[in-house]
Amino acid sequence: MKRSGLPVFVQLDGRPVILIGDGPAADAKRRLLERAGAAILGEGGDAHLAIVACDDPEPVAARLKARGMLINVADRADLCDFTLPAIVERDPVTIAIGTGGASAGLAAALRQRLEAILPTTLGGLADALKQARDAIRARWPEAGERRRAIGAALTGPLDPLADQPAGAVERWLAAPDAGPSGIVRIALRSTDPDDLTLREARLLAQADRVTHRAGVPAAILNRARADAERIACDAPPANLPGLTVDLEMNA
Image 1: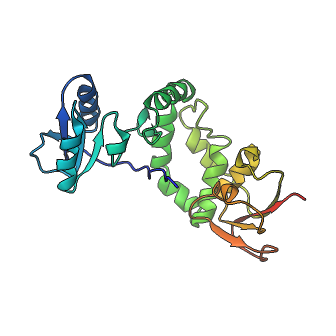
Image 2 (image 1 turned 90 degrees about the vertical axis):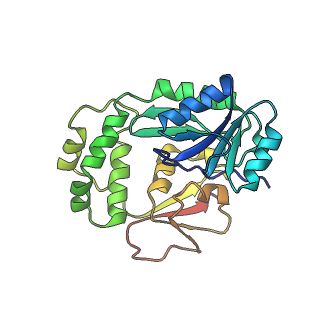
Image 3 (image 1 turned 90 degrees about the horizontal axis):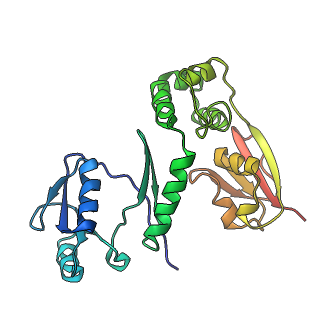
C-alpha cells in the first residue's frame, strides 16, 4: 500500500540548500527558497536538501542521493524524497497543500480556492493567540481543559474563517467557555467518515480519548487527534477526566 508523506515545516533561514538547473522551473524554486531565507548553493555545496530542475535529472539525482541528501526533482515525483506544496500564507499562518506529486495543478486549484476563503485577519488572530498564551495557560492550567476551551472558541467566537476584529481574543478570555467534557455518545449512521456531522467531527477533534465498539472502522477513529487515546470496549469506564467520545454503530 502506498503511504502518503509526512508533512513538515523546515526552518531554512540561513541554512544551505542545493539548487541545480535553470529556466522557469528552477527560477520558481529559487524564489521559494529565497522567500524562506535559504542559502542557495551549487551541486558541490554542503547541504542536506537539494532541488533539481534540469533537463536530465536522473544522473544528478543519483549523485545527490549517493551523498545522503533528500532531494526534490521538478515534475518527477518518482525521483523525489520530498515534494514542495502549494502555499497559502496569512503570516504567521502557512497552509501547505500537497498531492504527493500526483497533480501540481490540483494543488494550485485548491490554493486558489483557499485564498478566496481565508480572511486577511487570520494572521492577526494567530498573533493574538500567541500573545495571550500565558493568560490562556493561567486560565486553564490543565492541558486537556485548555485544548477544549481553545477548540470551542475556534468553532465559535474566534472562528478563523470569519473576520476577527482587534481585541477578539481578549473579549473571549473575559467570558471564557471551557467547552464540552464528560462522555458524549455518538451512534454512527455510516462507516464513511464523510457522513459525520460537523458537530461530531468537532467533538472527535477535541476528545481526550475515544471509546468504541469493535465494529467502528479505523477511518472514523482517525478523525480524532493523533494523541487521543483509543479504547476498544463494550462500555466506557466511568469517571474519566476530560472529554470522552464514545462511538458505536447504529443498529
